[in-house]
Image (tube, helix red, strand yellow):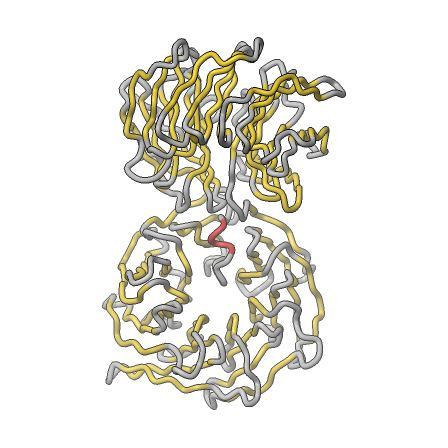
Length: 609
């Protein structure tokens, strides 16, 4: 199996997981879920390892107080059992798979001495279960909230008592105590008087539980008396609700809000002493050690490091938080690549997994990108019908071709002499543009396709190109005389096409899951392979020597094929969303694949014997 090398940061599903970012007690690692895997990342080295075992997206992650155990829960289809997996942190091994809840695991919590794991089911399950860690079996369970109350969505365990934990949610806060002798858990509803609140997050010290609400205030609950001792702030509540809480040894509280504010608060009136603004809704606050440093995770896939004394944020990891539509390497270098998504194009430094540049066009979606072969510009196709070119170092806009296509630009390619751009649109037209120093001129409109153009590849001599379309045709064009040379027809929606490096054959794939080999000369079919057992093939790339090619699609697998034998040589398992595009880097060092859940995965290129 191909070895997964690195992922670039959080992907889309993680961002919405409350408390999904965790700093390990060893102060050297952070953990976060990425699709159906859990990522363990070294803070100093940036080296990543992966806990594979879930069959669907991870919905919650928790680390035990000792740091020896990790537990993660997942989402599954309605009516089916959702697994909890218990992991050994040091060995990175699966210890147990615990199955009782249905649909979704909403929350997990370890007891302070690693005796019990408590799990909270999602809305369709509605139960809370206590598991014995030594025996790896369920002790007992109960409905999580009273019939008169709303759903419980938040769970936390007591810091000092193994037998106590708290659940909270829409109009409910319950303190639970385990009666091990009778194998029962007994809840006590906490009284909050006239206050009716939707609980969004919880934190506790040794004597109180602090509960954040969607109304923007914090309730302080005494677990002994089960009463609310006070709440605040009374006047200036936190805008857009409290979404994360972090208690410090000093008694201060760090509050994260739905408006992206991270605030340091003192006293019972929660007076804001210092605050910073981050990008997106704060979903996680996790401290390193005693709290001299802490980390902030947001729903826009940003991870920040904050020093407590200076209270200044530093962005340490980031990724797209929407589907990624394309990935390209510049000619001849594997150290850089660019990806595009809704709102932005990002340029990444491959060895360090670091974002170098972000080009933002708000509320627009970039469908395809290409580096010009001279390295002076990045050309991009946008859903507002415009072609935009940017400088790759600064991201400065160089030029815009307005009204390039009527139904959005869906595919783009450039000739090797950098004098022409070929673009495809949602309406099916292929347009050839002449690019001068200061002018952009439409040379020709090629009207044959009747549906969106999905992929364009240009021959090395710049005289011919092939376009794939969702209308079930691939057309080979002469772009000197502007006529059709050949048309390939198949009962599929073509998603991708590649020239063999010797340019006498092309390979195609699409929604029929088949990989087709075709003659360029007369468009005749040479062979057909079964490319996937389920789902469309959306991306394809071929090595510079033509010996191997890679494919990826809706089955979430990266597959490497021997071109001549038509056999799969390696399979990469790691994505949890549909793979949209993938590329082999120049020099065959890595394969980079991108997916609909916003993840970028880098794979070591397997050197076949």
